[in-house]
Length: 524
Image (tube, rainbow, N blue to C red; front, side, top):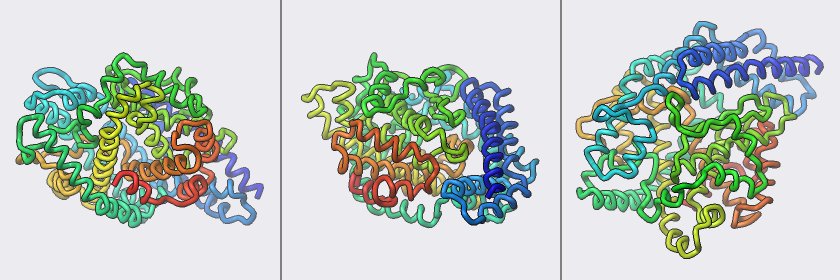
């Protein structure tokens, strides 16, 4: 037992030092766009991976994990270390090469700015055009411009996919996709079964709402519904539902302080996030990552959010989403061993982020925090409910599209990926491709580079969020915003960290393991 205790203590101490180097370099790379920081991130990531790659340490961990008398906490520590070690049993040169390739591609994404008529367009600029402009030619040009980065990264991204596959085969897997599901404690057959069933169960509702949406957009642009193309939607990948005029809440956020609204939201359920603003980076600036994310720098309370806030409904929801992650990280019990001071799974932290992100269009939230009057809310409520339903179904279809394509990408990266992408988009999202389009539009999505085989966790997170929401509303309060809700989340969901396997955590909090039927009942 002493050997196991000493082993775990040493591993936790070394992991803490190495991970801090990774998070610091990553934060600087994402906030500056500086190639030097991208290089430092590559080096730090390589060292971190090498820490888990030593074969003698791996074999020792396997032996010690089978000792009699280990506590539950120690068993979970060994599970965490063994998972990390299993995927890093690779030669040093391969680990370094994979890290370098990924960092360089990520830098290219962050620093690439498409141009339209000689003007550079940021991600926010592109969103602004697709949400508000009625100039179809401009929308079309901006949409095509948003895909240009795909051509810039395609060749090296496919090469990275092949290198990831080669590494996975060295570890006994058929490809990187299969390996990633295994190491994430996900049953690939079960996940894809759930996703296929969601498509089937949502199909009548999705087709009806999508038809209504296309008819509304056709009327807006003076065309036939059959002429609707990707640039008529509000997101380059059709990830979001374009709100109707009534459901477009941007007017309520003009001149509003999104940070204060976020603070008020979390304070109302007894969760304090104000100390996290000092080191966060919340407003647009040249060179920084144009999207949004949250990172736990040290698992001791230094939690940071990167956003590019403008006073809009989209960025309100995004900020609530990211600070959902932040609250989870902050309130994880810091007395746990370092290896367990993290969410049970990425899908569980996504669940919390999604639970809060959706509040930006929830009537209860609009009344309480934006103080929208009851008469206005009464008029908005039906539209918002319908919008939320459409948004969830569009989001689910988009995630499933990405996940199915990504599996095919790793199964055969030499196939005609451009055609496969649009075939998958058309079949699942029901989006008509541009005429005669044969470009790597899929590669313009940074997640293929930055977060490989991660996207399924977004939808699993949505399913978990739906289950949590219904549990709160049924057992605590239909109003949701109560101290009891905050106490449940902090004490039962956040604080235990990774002490329990993700599905066991869901069972402990809600009384049952993940049940997709809650999502179906809410949105289908």
